Length: 245
Ligand SMILES: [Fe+2]
Ligand SMILES: [Fe+2]
Image (cartoon, rainbow, N blue to C red; front, side, top):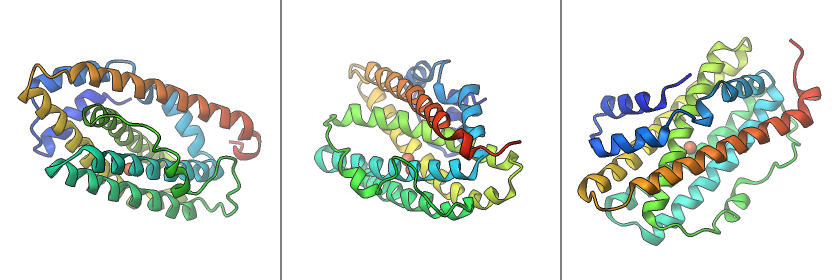
């Protein structure tokens, strides 16, 4: 499994993004030892889902909706509270996530599944409008986004690894698109991390640390719930969708 803290520090180094020691200490604590998405439970669930083209199709649709929701949230907070270069980066982030929403949909063809009639399927844009009922201030929002982007980056690495190891060769066609998405997710990790690091280093009195810890704990719990939903989906659909080994 991944050591997300060490991989993250290497990511900053390889992209020449400077982050401070105070940030490193807090993010080490925030990532902790019990990240839901870095467990063998997540690896097992994801591997099971990737064994079934129908389940991959369902997962792609979910990802498409989630990307559109993420874009809508970043856009709202960028317009409301951000300025200068941070606002520019957030607006680029919005464009990236909308592009990912379309890219995940474009990958449906790789699954070979042509009738997408899963419960919960919905139009990405309509869903996005339902997600704007919140109002975080900028610091809390960037901390939350940072936790989500580190998760997206790690889960995407996991998905690519599973596809590379998969006995199903048709999924390999998804890799070039996933690599493009990955490059953007890495940028999202880097700019949110650098922003938080700058806040912490420029004003040690500013209470970013406790907010960061809270946001990472929240995202971690949310991820366990997402995994429970994946299990529920398997409970409802495994008999039709899982191909016997
Ligand atoms: Fe994305
Ligand atoms: Fe992202």
